[in-house]
Length: 344
Image (cartoon, rainbow, N blue to C red):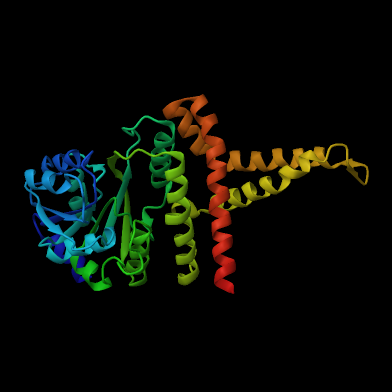
């Protein structure tokens, strides 16, 4: 493929680092400092401001970044597309404004393109040492890290938190869908689907780790997971008529999700007291089935729970389990809702 061979022949490909930003003054300076301190120097840093009302633009200017500003707030998809429009690099590296890359991150990105001439895009993951120490942030960021570390290197999606793509291919597929995704959503996943539909390959590099600075709280996590991830992703799957066995869509995850739903449906039967059916206690039977379903979820996710024990201890893992079952519950119900509305 000509696009890839062009990169493999270049001694030092030029990389355009593109960061969309909206009111991120709390951590944006650290994000830019990490990029500026990169061991790979053949780069340009492009910041696209999405109508921030804080000091984000001032910070970018002080750090020497090239700044473009959207006339109206349009979301990260449009911001990234604008950055790509003005980019001079052979490679576009998208970084979120709440991400800190490592000194060798860009070097690893370039090395991947050079050593894998048949890939056109790649992405990494959060590291396993989240900065924010509250429980929800630790749970969420470690979950992201684990999922990416366990997923196939041959990816069918993309992650714009730290993801790179050849500029020629980005332009060929039309960039991010800024019309459909006006807010932070699954615009990167959808881009990955379109890239793969063209017959191109995407690499998930498990050795590329970046640090996430965002603080998660329960409500913000649920809102994001349901309305910005589960529902739009389910709709995308319906439209594409394709269910990849990748990331959090493995068969084990699907079984776990269905088990979580069945657990909830069984809970009311625990309050049937001494009611019996053909001489068998309804409450006792429901309790037994609940235990079986819980065991199924635990066994299928034992590697994840073991990971939490290793990183944060047994008590942390015990606290994770109810949240993880809740995650499966709203993921499954979101998919079911989208499937029903799609079939109507």
